[in-house]
Amino acid sequence: MINNVKIGASLAKQSPWGVLLTGVIFLGLALTDTLNVSNIVYAVVFGHLTSATLLAYWHGKGGTFFIVAVLMPLLLIVMTELPNFMSLAWVINGFFFGLAFSLLVYHIYLSKFAK
Image (cartoon, rainbow, N blue to C red; front, side, top):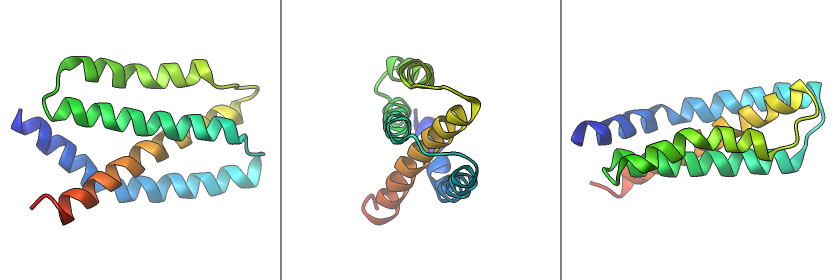
């Protein structure tokens, strides 16, 4: 199980790049389409939940957490209103922003408090 914890820590180290990349993509999307706030909120929350369940799996809490984490993007797509393709782009980017931001918080926690 120690390898799984290292996987989580390794991904958390890369999370600042994910936050930066999704921020740039948000900027590009904002220039091309209008913002649907409820879709973004759903996407970021589901990204956070996915990150939390993956971290639980990586820390040995059980395989059920992995299955829940894999199902989160499907639930997100089912729950959001997607009238066009750009709405889907907003949702996907928001999901990965939430995921990367949660992993960034975890990385900061590891570097500051878990020594």
